[in-house]
Length: 79
Image (cartoon, rainbow, N blue to C red; front, top):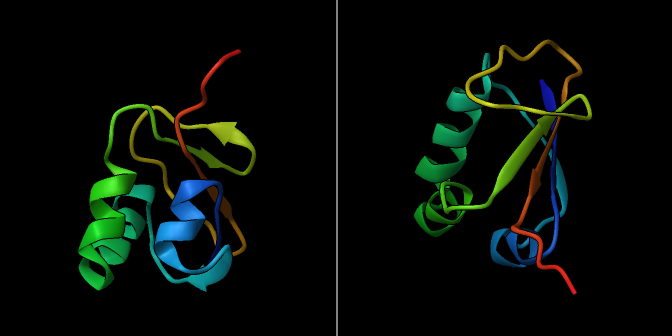
C-alpha cells in the first residue's frame, strides 16, 4: 500500500489530500486513480504535473514498495 499525496489544484480536483492505495507501480497507481476518477486521471497526465516517489522526482514508471510515499505535484509557476 502506498501513501498518496495530492497538492494544489490536484487535491481540489480529487477531493482529498491524502489516502492509501494498493498498486505495484507508479503507472498502475495512476491508472487506478484514473479509472476511479477520469477527470483526476486526465489532470495527473497533464503537462507539467510531476510525481515524486519517496521524495524523489520520478521520470517514468517506478516500482512501489509497501509503505512508499507518492506525491503528485501540479505545475509550478514562477514569479
